[in-house]
Amino acid sequence: MPANAFNGRTDYGIGIGLRVPHYAHILERKPVVDWFEIISENFMCGGGRPLEVLDRILEQYRVVQHGVSLYFGSADKPDREHLKRLKALVKRTKTPWISDHLCWGSVDGTYTHDLLPMPYTHAAAKRTAEKIRQVRDYLEVPICVENVSSYAEFHASEMTEWEFLTEVVERADCGILLDVNNIYVSSKNHAFNPYDYLNGVPHHRVGQMHIAGHTKFEKYILDTHDHPVLDPVWQLYAHATRLCGVTATLLEWDDRIPSFNEVHDEALKANTFIAEAHLRQAYGGQASTVVKAKAAQRQPRARRARAS
Amino acid sequence: MPARLDSTSDLRSFQRLMKDAVVRPLGPGYRMQKRWRDGRPMADVAAGFVRPNDRLTAFERLEIYNRMYWFRIIDSFHEDCPGLRAVLGDRKFDRLAVAYLTKHPSRSFTLRNLCSHLEEFIRAEPRWTAPHTALAREVARFEWAQTMGFDEAARPVAQPADFARTEPGRLRLSLQPYITLLELAYPVDRFVIAVKKRDTLRAEASNATTSGPTAARKRRVARPRRERCWVAVHRVDNVLYYKRLEPAAYRILAALRDGQTLARAVMAGGRGVTPAQVQDWFALWAKLGWLCRRK
Image 1: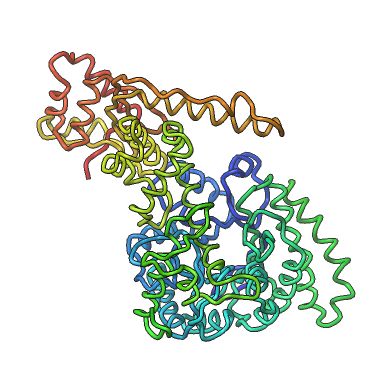
Image 2 (image 1 turned 135 degrees about the vertical axis):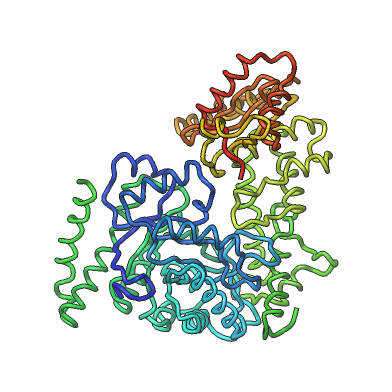
C-alpha cells in the first residue's frame, strides 16, 4: 500500500535510521536519502545539541518518528507528561505518522527499557487497542504498531502473535509497522512458519516496513541490529512486498554502526524487491520474466542520486 | 498470578511478576538467580508463566530478558558516569551500579534520567563508595550536571530592557535551566577532563592496534586532592563547558538562581566585591546568555 490512512497517505521510499555517528556526514555532505527515521525519545528533551541537529535535518529531509517507550501493551495508563513531550516533537517534525511497538515495558511507573512480549489474550488486545486509540486521539497523527522480536512465550496466550496483532490493529483501527526481521527472529525462536505470519496479517493496514540484521546463537536468535540484512529476511521482505505493495521501508542498524554509505547501500538493496513489486503491479503474472533486468536498472540510479 | 488473564488487573499482575523477575539483580556469572525472593526455585517460578521450547527451558527464556536488562542499564550507567568509574575502579563501580539501580530503578521513559538520584543514593549509602564517598558524591553531582547541560531547555535571555524596566530591589532573574552551579571540595572539573582525555586516547589506541594493552589503556587517572572550587557547568552553541567562578560570583549567581532580587543577589557577593567586578561579571553572563526572566 504505497499510501494509506496509516502512513498519512504518503509515498515514502527507502529510509534509514538517523544515528549519531552519521550526523557529521549527513550535515556536511547532504546525501540524497528518501527519509530518516528518528527515535522519538532521543529528541524529547528541552533543547541543546539533539534539537539543533534535528532542526538542521528537518530543513533538508523528511523525518518519521519511531518510539520505543509508549508501551501500548502496559496495563498502566498513558503518561500525560510523556505524551505532551511527544506531541511537541510531532509538531516540530511534522511526521506523517508515528510508530511504536506492540509490547509492554513498564508497570507501576517503573521502566525496564525493553520491548517485552505480550501475553496474547483477548483482554490484553482490548486494553492495548484502547491505549492506541487514546494516544492517537491525543497526538492527532496516524499510528503504526510494530511487531517485536521475542524470546519467550506465555502459558496465558490464547492465540498466535499474528492473530493478536490483527485483533489489536482492527480494534484500534490503526496501522502496522511490519518488521520482517522481527518476524524471522521470532519464527526461529518459537518455531512457527514466518510465511504464515505474513499471510495472516491485514495487508491493507501495513503503513511501513522494517528490515534489519540479527545474530544467531546456539539456541536462539537475538535481534541485534548490528549486521547487514540476511538472505532469509530479504526473502520475507520480498514476500511482504508482494502482499502489501510497495511500502515505506527502513533499515535499522543500531550497533557496530558502519559508515553512512554502507548503511545506505544496504538499505537500497530493497530496491530490487520494490522493482519487482512495481512490475508485478504493471504486468501482473508476467512480471518475473522482466524483474531482474529492470531491478538492475533501478539500483545504479538510486546510487547516482545519493552521490550527486 | 492468575492462570488466565481476563482483565487489565490480571494483565497488571502478570506484568508485575515479569518486571520483578527481569529487574532482579543477576547472580554469580551474570546468570539469573536460582532462587526467587520467597526461596522457591526460580525454575518453578518461571515455569509458572513462561512456556519452554525444544531448546530452552522457561528459566533460560526468562533469563535472556533478565540479562539483557542489566547489560543495557549498566552500559548506560557506564556511559553517563566515566568519572565516577575512574574514582571507584571497575569492580566497585559495578557494585554501586547494581545497588543504586536496584533501589532506584528507572522511573522515566528515557535512560537519560537514570542517574538523577545517584548523588542522593551515595550520601544515603556511603558503604558502596567508601573510602572515597566525598569525592564520589561530587563527581556524581558533576556528571549529572553534564547531563542537564547537554539537553535541558534554554529560556529567552534577559534583555537590557528587563533591567531598565524594573528596579534592582524588585527585579528577579533566573539562571538558564541547563546551568548547574557547583561548590566543590575537589577539582572535579579537571579530573573529569583528564578522564575524558584518557578515554579518548584509549579509543584511538584501540583502533590503531589489534594486540596487547597500550600505555594509554593501562594509565589510571589519579584521584584529585582536596581543593575548593566553584564551577558552572553550562553550554555555549550547544557545546558543553565547565567554567570556574570566583566565590563571590558564585554567591551572586546562586542567589539569583534561588529567587533573590537583583539587589539582594549582588549583596550576597560580599563586602570585598567592587562595582566594577559586578559589572564585568554581569556583562560576561549576559554575553553567555546565562540570565533569563523568571517564569
